[in-house]
Image 1: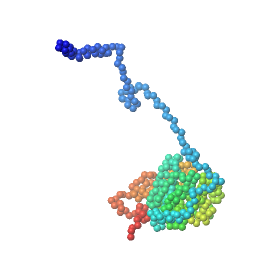
Image 2: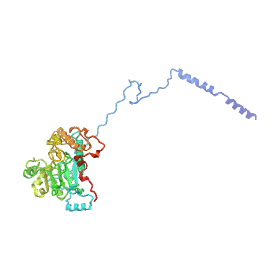
Image 3: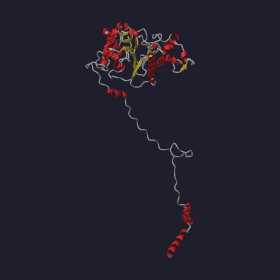
Image 4: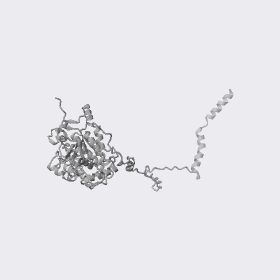
Length: 443
């Protein structure tokens, strides 16, 4: 008992020792030493700021940050023209087999007639005497490199064609692909037309228009019934083609061709003069010798077509209609400065010199280029006027027009009313609601 009592007494004495005074007694000398010693300093902390978060009070005599490393040198540019040139097929030689657009197509008219009979929902004539028309156009696969606004001009020119096709119920196809590398330049249209004929048997007529063609009479439509017995409609003159043998007797920038065997055969015969290289150069000399006013440069599609008409008139001439009663092709130089006069004196729907169906910018290069025949600024101004002149005929349907033909700014010309369907305007009615759009009512 005495031993346990002594152990408890010692524990009680230990727990009664004051803790706080003991700790203060031990720590105080150390703290006093730290603040009074001259040989010992507290460590300093330096805060560095980035260039975008420097506080306003930061000293301004700080050394500037080290310069950034120089940028990496740009990757070597790839010359697209050289790259594409290396992938082109070898030039066709005069000793090679004649060029062909593809496998020979025979009995096409009968086969197409069967297809049309088996697909009655896709008739070649959308109404009596009204053929189904496919407007075909296109431009280079690459963007314009010679001008700053060439691509925009091409866009507006295509919009113009879309407007015309929408008003008249035509289909439209735009190509920016070269389907056959041998048929480059002017010749690109031939393989394209052949491919579209075979792929669209429902299209009775295909209407080719160059990218620099502007429809400037949005109301006029070619008289299709006049060409019922013909397969090719060209802007041109019999005397210039068959008598003068002029390569300028027609223009191949706007023409209509029927979807039939005769046309496929014509495209085959036409295309044999087009392969780039020695064949095209050689035919250029042949054309220069056969036509009255053509220099001996490489063969172009227009001269080649005139050559076929002159030398094989019995084969091709009888089914070709040379149209001169309206402007299927209108030379822009004598047109673009007369638009204001046309507005004062006449109205759309004529299609001829009074109000031309087409204004064709022959010799202009919307994308620029070394082969342009006219000053780029003059061409650009003329195209702007033609596009605005045509666009006004569409904008007026909705109560607007351009402030002038030399600007893209528009203004309102017709006040809005509470009865917009009460307007009685024959021209507007013909454009907005042509008779061919009317549905046949059941009897």
